Image 1: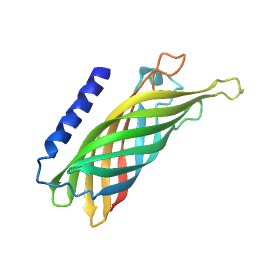
Image 2: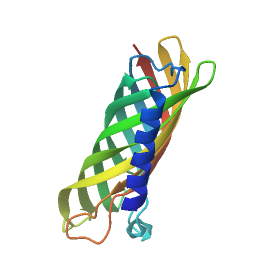
Image 3: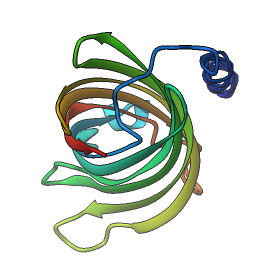
Image 4: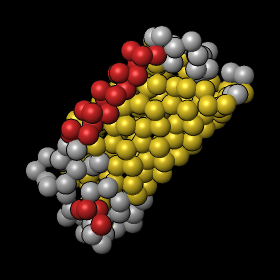
Length: 190
């Protein structure tokens, strides 16, 4: 998994250097900010067991600035929570640093894809009605790759996104918090 992630980052950087010679400019502005609302599902097999809810809601904010034509550097901060009554309660807060490459697929329609690194705060709590469950937290290093499809209306943008994030194992456990996020975003360009 780490080799795949490293390979994807190398591809993004190669595209960045080749974009220096590109005449076409992505129309995401000199910078952009977006609010994201996503469905999140944790992909480790641990969450397939009964009582371990593996999906939930993610809300985040991202910001990017153009560093060279078609290449943006930025980050994302958000929080994901699973939805469950009994079982494990997960609070997942990723802090990401990303690079993305954007191309204009059609008039006012931009496709971008990229990769980055993350450092995520995770809190796990057993929802035990008798109060004898665990309550643990940890910081996890990881990385992600993603793609967005954005439609722009002057300075306003709306779109859809997908991201797969890989994390290291949770402390003293044999599972990780790798996840898949799919959703929508609205934003502004400046």
